[in-house]
Amino acid sequence: MTQTHVSSSSHRLRLSVLPVRLAVCYLMPDASVPLWATHGEFYAVTRTRDELSIVCDFTLVPPDVVHEGPWACLQVAGPLDFALTGILVSLAAPLARAGISIFAVSTYRTDYLLVPEADLDSSLISLRDAGHSIR
Image (cartoon, rainbow, N blue to C red; front, side, top):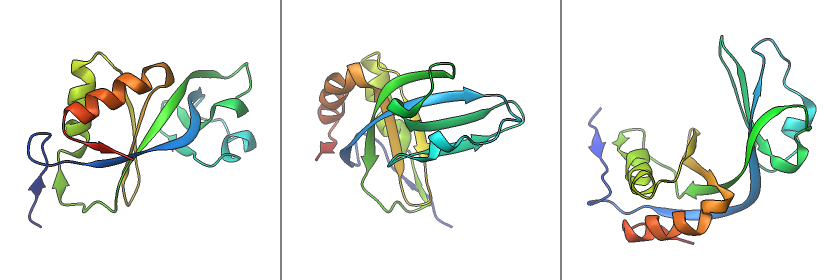
């Protein structure tokens, strides 16, 4: 398979801001996926030997659960070809230069970039300045 490199200087991505407020949650690795985590428009679950990590609707997270947020969510227009390289770096680099942290979620068809909700406006400016378009 031939790989195609994507860089912030040669490729422009189209992004949409999703109308969600998300949390990134930590649970013990042997925990069951709680029902509250799967009741939003957007959620992602990752289990490793070390943790159960859940991205879900911020308003549904119980106060006793370790979590960060709220996060805003940017969707990369897809579908993205698996041969493309540099998608996340083309987004992460301008945000890193602006001092904005990110949390990335990838799916089969596209990528999602979470930024702290308080940094959304600055994130959009940085991404536009890097040549990306925002819907």
